[in-house]
Amino acid sequence: MNTTAIIFDLDGVIVDTAKYHYLAWKKLANTLGFEFTKEQNELFKGVSRKRCLEILLDIGKVEASQEQFDLWMVEKNEDYLAYIKDMDASEILPDVQKTLDYLKGKKVPLALGSASKNAKPILEKVDLLPYFKVIVDGTNVTKAKPDPEVFLIAAQKLNAKPENCIVFEDAVAGIEAAKAAGMTSIGIGDSKTLTNADYVFKDFTEISKEFLEGLMQ
Ligand code: B16
Ligand code: MG
Image (cartoon, rainbow, N blue to C red; front, side, top):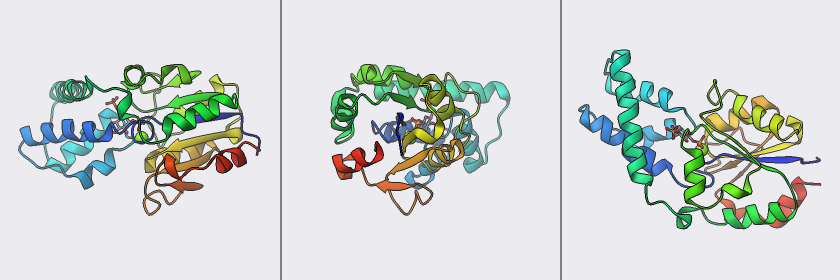
């Protein structure tokens, strides 16, 4: 395979922001009078903010007008932004920077493909913005993962054929999106959850230089 581009998801791959999303959703659920568990939060990974709120309200069996729905979306995001306010490079997940440095050294073009509308400020906070030639995030897409749109736009912007792209993803919806785009998918997380991925690693500490080199042959 001749790899011409590598696309990274953000939340759960580069930084562990899932815990902050969880705290913000849990706060809203508790305000509305119900519990929201870490297990339920798994359903929210890689899923757009709007879809997350729809699922949350289903869990709590809460009905809302469009106006109320929009207010809760804003409230959740404000809480999330407060949690990530002081985020810095210490929150980059293990060996991610090492992997980015290695790929940069090999001159492989890198893209970010995230569902988050907060992706750019997060990359700025953790000082990783300069690594990415292209950023495609929740502000650029109309269809959320598992739709392949986010990854296809990234490939197009990098002038790469989808079959020559590799996607690092932690979410089931993200792996499905990569598959639907016709790209090679590498799951970061639990192999029992990410069963559709072409490869799965617990985290980047498990990914060897030899494996990365093999991908680029
Ligand atoms: P925001 P990713 C996703 O990011 C998160 O996994 C998901 O939990 C979140 O709801 C979504 O971004 C939207 O985030 O509210 O910041 O726009 O994993 O695709 O990088
Ligand atoms: Mg993710």
